[in-house]
Figure 1 (tube, rainbow, N blue to C red):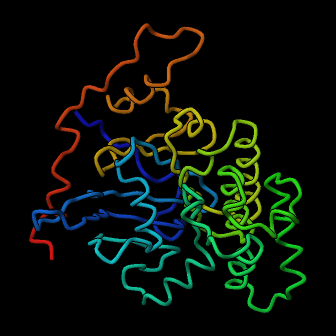
Figure 2 (cartoon, one colour):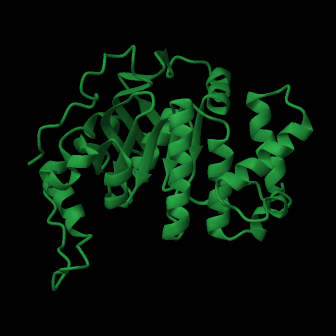
Amino acid sequence: METEHVSARPEGAAVSAAMLCEIEQLHVAFPGPDRQWAPAVCGVSLTLAPGERLGLVGESGSGKSLTGRALLGQLPPTARVSAQALRYAGRDLLAMPAAERRRLCGQEMGMILQDPKYSLNPVMTVGRQMREAWALRNPGMKRRDMDERVLASLDAVHIRDARRVAASYPHELSGGMGQRVMIAMMAANGPRLLVADEPTSALDVLVAMQVLDVLDDMIARHGTGLIFISHDLPLVGAFCDRVAVMYAGRVVETCAARELHRARHPYTRALLAASPALADPPDRLPVIERDPAWRGTAGQQAAEGDAP
């Protein structure tokens, strides 16, 4: 059975006015082959305070990335999105004109995507793409100043020979190098809200720690609220303030990151058991025994009616 949720708000935080981001009963559905709506996110409710790091964990297909994309308005036109509330800094994102929402994403909200091969423009150099991103927020910045900022941002994520990388095209970079370019592009803008979708998945341990230092510094300097999407529960437990665990499109448990090892929901316990300690490994890795009750009925609303 599903455990009782821990409050989504940090202890002592004020309601709404102090929250950077509020998601209430978010539903996302896509048209299925049988002309019925197929639910992908089912009644997710989350909040994020300025300067807070919220980890979003769960297996592939649980709705983590879709939740982040819905918040930033980056879902395809075929998606059907509904929510009781979707607010950023007290502003209603669902009622906001499309042009204003795009401008907000370029200036105050950002997303580090999981695979740089599909995120970076293949016909533009790294430096040109980074200048284009900064021009949205600083239209009056001179070209020379932007070039200096490109090199400084690449240095900040520990890229050697930043000048050569800035002049390179994405296909000339390794996967890990491309991921660091994406992080440099987003972090240097100092967004108030950042969704990081598996930002360290393509990096070795040492470089991943360096990248987390960059995100830490950005949060400290700008008070950035971070939604950190990951499969790495030990990393999330060490890096984030709170953790929300998703299963089949819904949040089944939230807790303080430092208490993640004491999580009560059987799905969370199964995820933790899938990463056993090296000092005393089990003979066999456990298999998740899934309970249909974990899905609940939250997806019914999104599935009602015929798809186009």
